[in-house]
Image 1 (cartoon, rainbow, N blue to C red):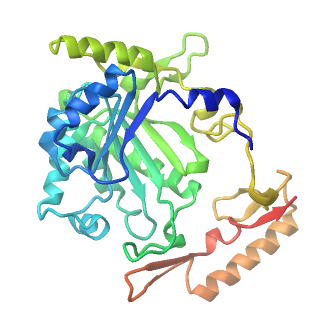
Image 2 (cartoon, rainbow, N blue to C red):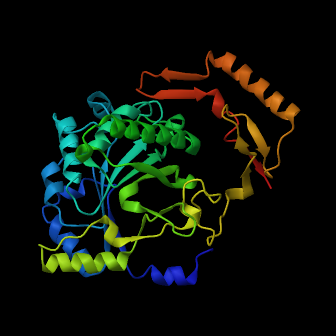
Length: 353
């Protein structure tokens, strides 16, 4: 039900391949040949690595988009979150990021935010990103997939979209700070801007201004080009395969970002040509909030009265007294960190229409 015929038919022809999630794809001894075979079949290549094999990153052929997971900004947090196999995991991550600087194609520092674990180390993240001059910085809230012996996370460790947005704004400021502090123009890190967001997946994208932004001659405003021209990439990759001395860069296969995907768009990253289906017709009870987390608009996007907002604020103040602070973090013996944030108490409420 709900499957569009044209998309069902299109799905029978593979166009994209994401090498990620299970294991470390870059460890496969024939990874380069495999990537070449995918390109010969006009299949785009997305490869995600945990940054523990820096030389393999350096040796990799041009691919559509190369990600390095940056799960922590200190050696201690990296050890706690990733439980790496190598004792020199921190140095390996740093060297891997440095290799990104010399890659000609799209490179991404992927940050997965785990609330209570790695969400407050902003300056450290900026310094790591600066090592690689990454094309893009993708920041996504961790998805809680249920309890298991292999994980000590719980639902409270999954941040809300507005929390990820706030973190990315601070990260952008830290990157700009590093850029401003460098007096040598040749060593300055790139300028990054807030390009895209996708609320449903709790993700925000920072993009290099020099690679993805152009001035629109009609409006005089910045226009983002973060989408990919896949056909053009395949032509460029094929030419590079025939003649390795031929090189190409990020700007050679960009496309305009659709308006609905831009950061701050009303659609918040949801493609308006798609139909949104809600489970059991559940809708958010409140649609807008102030900086303190107090609802300002109801489920129909109508402004709440002053008295209604005052009542809600009173409930939040009572909650703060109950937990002893605005935010309470409880460390359990199991290793879990349970977070109770009074500012989020109205966020998850729903109504059934």
